[in-house]
Length: 240
Image 1 (spheres, rainbow, N blue to C red):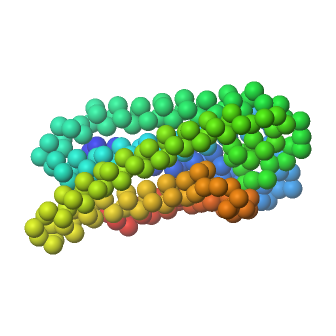
Image 2 (image 1 turned 90 degrees about the horizontal axis):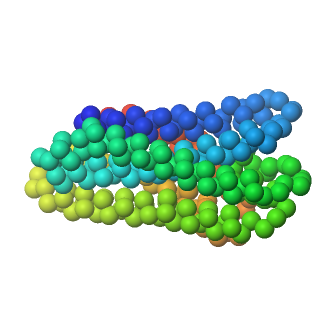
Image 3 (image 1 turned 30 degrees about the vertical axis):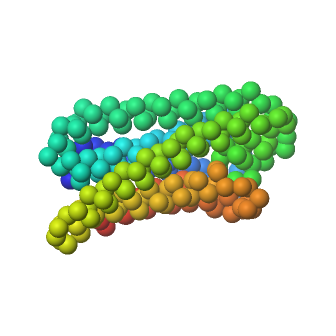
């Protein structure tokens, strides 16, 4: 693997570990303790970090798809286009933008009054579950969440699909079957991760809520915030 791809994989690994560190300790504590209370500030921090890491994973997966596009479609220029400096800038930009966008959501939450009941029907302080506790109009929050989903989920997903369309076209032009197999194997693990993450997130935040009961939404959010980070190292390890 190239140094740039290893750098991007390391950023993805940090995102996955951060996901788990943000949600799992409190969830495990709730399983073994009768006191499942969480104060307001830690709950808001959990929501903020959860959103920031989710956004970061979306953007880093897009950068990784572009990296694979350059590796397969422009192999001779790969080291120039995807230099260590370019990858570092793309990764840092993804992190900064993710935390700023998550901050917008949190600021909009903090303007709302919460007058009870103060019981979150979820495994952690997920943003939609927190908004249900507000005793004020949350339409602005819902609009911002939907706009963010279009920008951070559908937009990146379209870029990934465009990248893989070009990658598939380039692979099919390779004359030998062995060459096609090797070229596709470099992308298979990343494509699998993209399908798992974007699929579950889009169903959770963009599908009509009437089609997904609240308990089903809880399982979906648990899938892409806990199971996905656990599966990513396994997927990439098996591929390697």
